[in-house]
Image 1 (cartoon, rainbow, N blue to C red):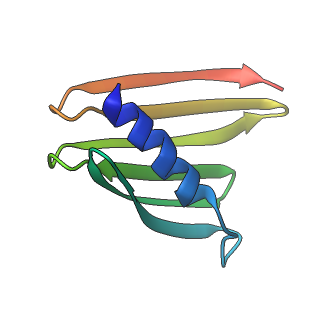
Image 2 (cartoon, one colour):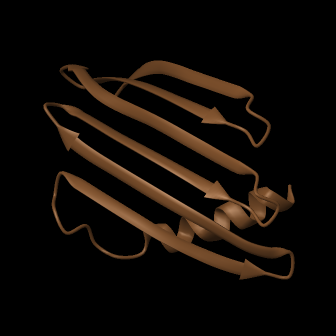
Length: 101
């Protein structure tokens, strides 16, 4: 839970600012709390109907949480997505599916 609060704060910092290119971007940042400094990096790109991104945050104890994912247009108003989250102890959580908009 404590890492989640730091992750949310850092994610907010990483989202500030505009991308220099429409199809690719990278952000880095850090936030310091009473528990220590959290450092993160995020990047993403779009092309050919698919957008992907990856982000990771490392906490003051050296533990890293990372997430990567993508979304693709697979038909008119239909999209498929996939993401993988890796916790600080190496456990992976995968989520995927599709939706219609």
